[in-house]
Length: 395
Image (tube, rainbow, N blue to C red; front, side):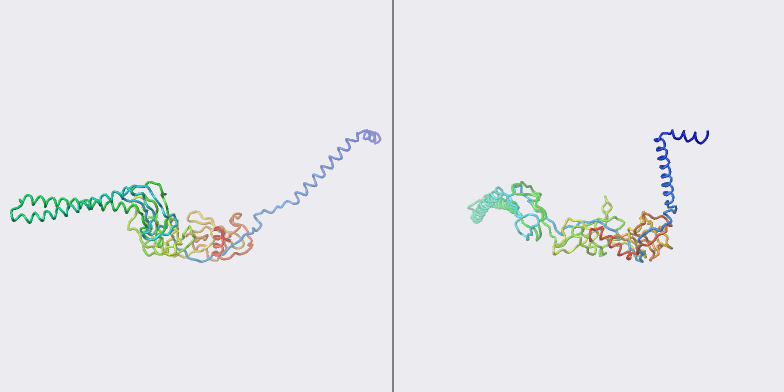
């Protein structure tokens, strides 16, 4: 086939076919260029080889003393549930409500005791009548006994009059005893404050029916409060009287230090816990009763320790893992845990004071990774205190 014939055949190829072929060739060329460009921009250096930005804090030399923390209740020094003890009656009035300040002898409530009052009056009248009759019989017996020596009356008659007089005297004494009982019931109808204090609860309202032993109001004396708690029996020696205790009142946030006032001589048989009480003066009534407080008591002796923020380590039981920056690399270090308090972790001195411990960015680190410090934070105590303030919602 000569050249002229070939040109004739190509001239007969449809124009559409030529366009499609040219477009396909252009697409293949464009794809090849894009592939080459993508391959040229791939980073063949592993990310682990780059230094990672972290924040480190200097570990601080410190001491640690083990402590125990217990939960206790602030109880009033004196509490009285005021109610009837002898009579059953309807409540007539209740003159106080929770928060009222009362003095000893103030009327707190009254009962409808009309039947008791009437019975008391009836017994008093019977006692007065018997007493008058006994006096008359006694005088008569004395006059008759004066006639005995003259033989005007028989000895039997004298003895009968004397016996009748003694019988009336016994009857009078019996009525007086009944009158004393009824007067106690009458006095029980007016309920008074047994001491200076405050009303903490009101259980009954006018119209309610109460029986002996049921309380209408509860009064407390808060001039001194008792912090009562129970500790495990193995902490018996740690809570001896006069040992200092740090107290944190949950309701007010107040913190104070008071010595332990008293300790039970033995454990409760069922729970094997020892009862402990701490007296706290409260003349201004700033501490509410029946609220919760935390009691912390030191145990043992202080030991040398290294202090770091709690956020700089992962604690697993008695061990803690932390990254220590050395020669530009993060080294995973495991140390023994001595204890923690308020966002601070105390570990053994195997972690040398002054070591740079990674605080921020440690979750992305592996042992031996290269690191670059963004900055060196304040000492561990300052960092811990700031973290603690943020956790408590302070600015």
